[in-house]
Length: 92
Image (cartoon, rainbow, N blue to C red):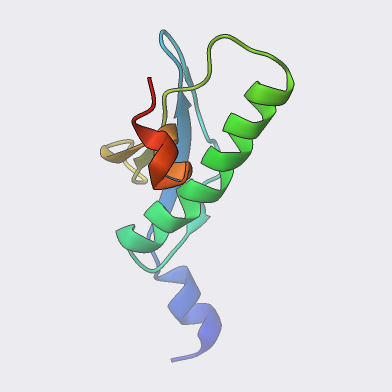
């Protein structure tokens, strides 16, 4: 089996951004070997979204990145706070 055949057989994951009252949909998705890889992939933009919100002085930041499959089924929700170092996750 060639590399291109293996890549095409990988599941496609979609990374939607959930706000308090809205969801920004990922229309393209990303081919990844499994859900754990999708979880790791979601953490990088989570940190970037938090950093951008802080830099811009926003009072409200996105809540989570929702990982969905090609059928639109939610597989996992990754709270943005998971992108923070552990000592900052439960700060009040």
